[in-house]
Length: 270
Image 1 (spheres, rainbow, N blue to C red):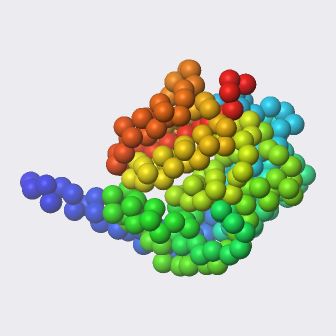
Image 2 (cartoon, rainbow, N blue to C red):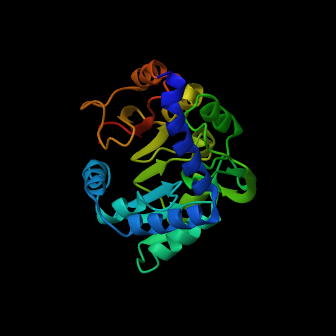
């Protein structure tokens, strides 16, 4: 049997799944699944709670930038934090409002973050988790094959504010999680001071953007870094390292479509 014959059923199944995912029924099923997930607690959630407990203490203010449908917001709440959930996609914002409507510790902000306040365009994907305000990131992950079967065929205008402006509005957070599909550097450009700790997502196809984020954080006074691969819920090293080592680690992953991760940064050893 030829390789083409073996792979044909897999291509048919993948194609069928793609059609269902893009249909109204598929979107409704996804929304129901997301709502169920945010209202449940799994072993993965517990592992994430233990991981973030090294960074977040009860009573801390946390900014969840790119909150999507709240899978990290619920973890931060379990740690006793107050959470500002920032999410510009209207569908995700409404789900967040519904899921956390009875918890006064959550504030949903339906805005994007960037280098300056204003308005910007967001390309909305079949999967809300990979909608993005970065055309370069979309092209990179599509060309690499990481998200080759997905489309970004709808554009919306979203209001944009900055981390500095959010701090004036809600206070200085102890931790900021940034996961905005390639727009992380722009978000950090809107920050003019160091806080206790933060994280940003790193995509190896866009290594230069990740390196720019490290340089930005170093210029603000962040001096210790670490890396967490994928959704592992674990730091790569037990000892935090300096910015130079962080840059070397990101360089070593450049172009590797098999992985992704989050870079963590903090001020000193506190």
